Length: 174
Image 1 (cartoon, rainbow, N blue to C red):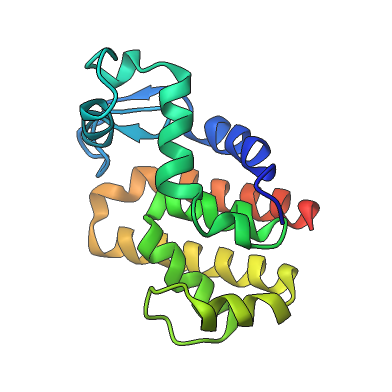
Image 2: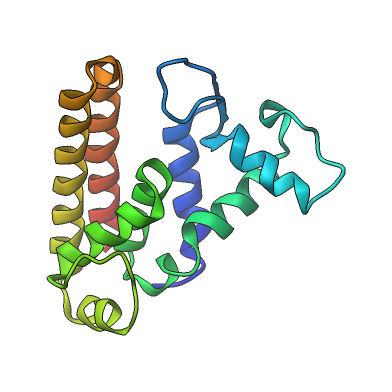
C-alpha cells in the first residue's frame, strides 16, 4: 500500500489502454493511451504549450492526468493489488463507479463517498476478496452495458479479458 505502486500500476493500465483510438461507437470518443480528448483539453488549460491533439500528448502529460484524476487520492490508501483494481476501474469506468464497487466489496453503503467508513472497512477487509468482488462487479457491469446498448457488444470481449487480466495481476500483487 504505497504511492510507489503508481508507476507499476500505470504501466499495466497503459498496456491495457493501448495507443490512439477514434472509434465512433466508443463512449470515450477520441482517446490516446486511455486519455480522452475532452479530458486532455481541460488539462491543457492549466498546462499551456502542449500540443492540442491528444494523439500528440507527451507521455508526461498522460501520466500526470492518470495520477491526478484516477490514482489520487484513494488508490494510495488501498492495499497492494486493490490499488491496481481500483485504479483500473476508475480509468475504464469512472472514479465514482469504482468507489461504489470498492464500497460494496468491503461491505459498506455504496454512496460513492470514500471517507472514514470505507477506509476503515478496507483496513480489515481481505484484499483478495476485495479484488475478486470488484472484478465481479466490473464483469456484471459490462454485460449490463451491452444488454442496454447492443452497439457496445464489439467491446465486451476486450472488457472482460481486461477485467480477468487485471484481477490476475492484482491478486499476484497482494
